[in-house]
Image (cartoon, rainbow, N blue to C red):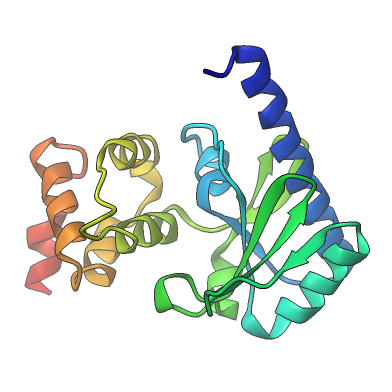
Amino acid sequence: MTTAGEREEAAEEFLGTLTRVVNTLQDKGIRFAVGGGYAIYARGGPPSEHDVDIYLREGDVVAATGALVGAGMTPVEPPEDWLTKVYDGDVLVDLIFRPNRRPVTDAMLDRAEPLRIGPALAPVVTGTELMVDKLLVLEAHRCDFTPLLTIARELREQVNWPEVVRDTRESPYARAFLRLLRDLDVIGNVIGNAEER
């Protein structure tokens, strides 16, 4: 079991990595947005204790990896075809260019908002895109709604729920979670309204 001091030290290490990544990519003029747990944290959700997720266009992956390696990070070639990875010491940084089979586009990066994450000011993906990504990850072997309920409650005012319903309609797991949110009165009756369109 980790102590509060150990958790605080780990959080500082992750924020240090995030700051180095943000500063390096901004210095090189590479467009990106923070996604995943740190985007949720920047938007008022629970603090992240996982890797650092960076969204960028596929055409910028080589330049971004080179910039981060030049800043002292170690590249890793993952088996997945939708991201690449670098390590900053023990901290994993995912450079994601196709989350859930949806390419990162200029339009997505244009919608990102500059937000403070610890000492860094960085573009952060929208609450709507965060929820879509979180819901599209759900599947038979990865179907824990507990953390998603917390995230949905914390971010609900920042999310375009009809858009989430539309963009996740093919997933039975996402549909089940959205119905749960409706029944708990977290999002109102956006499901029926979106399905009527």
